[in-house]
Length: 455
Image 1 (cartoon, rainbow, N blue to C red):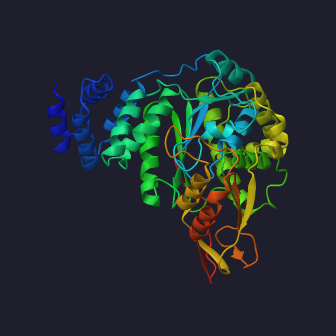
Image 2: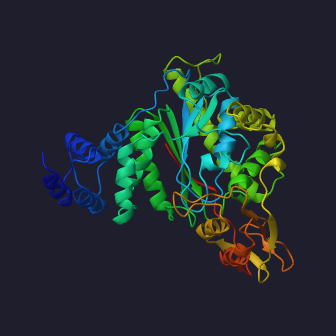
Image 3: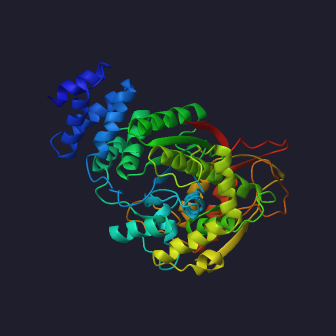
């Protein structure tokens, strides 16, 4: 078998066999296939695409290129979620404690952020003492005992993906559905969960900006997950404005804690309502998947062996939230990993920026649209993200947005607050934030937050 022949085969639009895909991934991971040949093959895939069978085998080969996390010591059906990115996305901090409080084990590995904001791991480090580098034994024990643990990704999880992505990044082959899907799902399969729920963002702050592409990506990933024996759902969610009201590491943890404190799910800010809707939808599908998979594996503990509907799962998730059980579970999880649980009950203890500056719009009108990625760039300017892997994140900075699409903004009303530690970047941040939003004399209504479900 020669890489030259395989490049030509894909260039001419033919389908690879499983053995050929394994040869490519294993050879490249071991350094036996040079970058220039792998780049040529990636470009061929970019133009010619891959079948569902090819994409599944590519994903499995990438997952097998390193360690697969063994979760067999964890009792019950394990669940996981993945978001394709966005601005202000803090759903893990709401979804995970809801599921854990309902007895569903969530053993999650997350990464650090590179770009406009920190990753889940960075945000958790805003909590004093929180340790993301716990031992494997403690990780397993925590999931068995409190149903939740979250750690940084191992360095050897799907190493083929890291090598391939580095090439895609410099050869203009990033935005290929089979390559995106296999990259995401190889890490999810290697992480070992039985049920996977994918939050596929769509809009001006998402990688997939149009709904058709987002649904195609979701369908591809769901097919991969189900084909690999994992019950997988894809939830298409709107990212045409930031999710929730706060953008920034400590600010997003703060907002998640405020959501977990909710007793009434009706009379809340519209930004919080969007965040809540995404969180509860994800949680309900994760709960439904876990319970219904339990029936198939004789691990169903409820009195009646009846499949759980989405409506029933949603009600249980809402009760876990409004009863305070999810908030208590989040605090228990934080304490179990060395963090200060008082910060969960009193998020005002979280890190605060030196300057909190109001932002006003230049004219009155209805908020008509938002360049969400630009809001993310404002957070990067403030120091809340990483321009390079070596960049140090300021966990306290960010943006607190007070108006959303469809809201009327008066000239003397505060549109948002900038949280900054460097006085020298405040004016640039304010200008970029104002420019990210468009006002109109006529009211524009926001997009539906849940755009579709792929099962």
